[in-house]
Length: 434
Image (cartoon, rainbow, N blue to C red; front, side):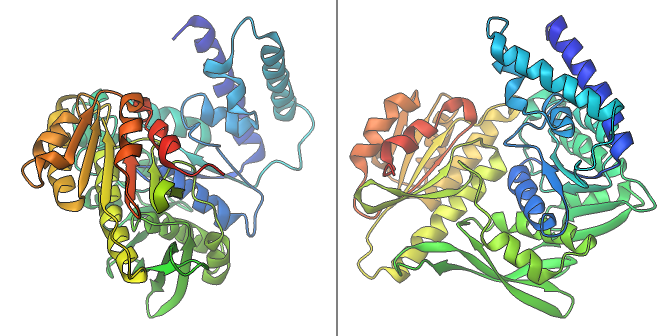
């Protein structure tokens, strides 16, 4: 990090901490190895039914993005977008800093949000401590951790990743704090012992405080494609039917459950939460369902990849294929998985990719791998499926034309890999442009 970046980070931290102290917004912190962004969006949608709420946009969830969100400054103006030669952008950015300073030390801004929903990254040790020291969350939400979490390359092992994420829960105030934990992830559930705050659990298991049951796809208005997921939300002996439009992965329900849990704590009832979530758009490149060429269906999950997220994607591919066969009598499409390298796994790289390969060999008809680490996926999948149905490429640019060529009428295609693998190139090649 350059000296100028260090100075900027220090300035933002000082201003953000002062802003939190002055305006005292209720802060909801969200962390986990997968599902953070969807959970953040869902929580924001639910709380916005009753409150003035701000969230961090996209994935601006680090030591720069979080304080910029607190200050109400567009994070896109900073970091890599700032160039000394780009004077208009540089001027605009520092003008926003001055405005933020005025809001912090000058006249009180009565329009400042009542609540902040902040996704908090834990890319390296100390990240959570740094961020909670700035924003002081009242509510902490942990989505999932998994056996081999993302960013584990920068930690001694998975246990240390879990320990880092648990720092959010440890930081919660005892008298009015709330920990919202995934009941179905034992590592997350064990965080109950790290706080004296109230605890709310969510999951697909009846042991959770809030759980989902009766999960199925609902059909869109055309009658021949998937509209999203329907299920029941249960609390004690009461339940309410729910729909998540555009959602196709069962794991996306966890985000809805987390949001409902937070909403209920602040007085948003199940009906209001249902109305907020049914029409909430799925964040781009995160299990987004798209129409593909040759009447295919494309699941765009190209934003990033971790072992637990790729596992969920392959399960979604399987269930989508089965459902389409039921609603389309003439359906004869294949399940195709296009998988790129999962980065930042360090010593667990081969192990994690081979585990995905074993699952892919059972869940898809054709497998396309991209990148050097993904060759382990291809190798392990070869023990479960015909080797002629496995194709491997070095880059997305190289793979794109071949994926387009092999598509047949009605295929279902999952495209997923780490952000640096540029898997969106594949999606652009095979989707129908609007």
